Amino acid sequence: MAETDNNKMPSGVSSVFPPFVLLVIVGAFIYWTFDYTETARRLPMLIATGTLVLIVLDILSRLSSKMGDYIRFALGAGFQDREMQFSPYWLSELKQMAWLICCVFSVVLIGILPTVLLFIFFYTFIQGRQGFLPSLLVAISLTIVVWLVFENLLDYQLYRGMLFDSDGY
View 1 (cartoon, rainbow, N blue to C red):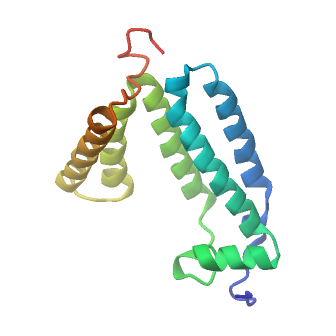
View 2 (cartoon, one colour):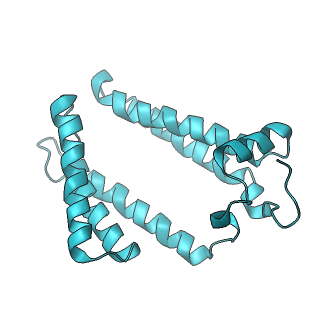
């Protein structure tokens, strides 16, 4: 489980600063959800709780300890894995962040279902370099699954967005 020099985690990746920034963001998100009713708060709190668990695992995996070694080994977060042997260019990381920021703003403006459709389509078509038809089919299929699970099976009305909700928020 110990890492050799070739498989050693880069210092930028082992820094615990990024997960603590995410911890602050999730804390603000949790605080923000208390403006919602109890029912409306359920899904955001579930997401925030799951994110907190992942942040704790991330922090622990970045530590130079036996627990950190074990978590990196168990979750495949070490640099011995083929896909983890390089440090991505900062511009490609900014591109990924821009995709996510656009997704969040899209959810706020037009709601969850249209965002799922648009995000999956454009991400697979542009970023994933898939064809038009496969990207469209995947986007439509996933949107239908999300609609079936949340709107029908769970009877949970998904957020409609500022533009489509009568309240505007």
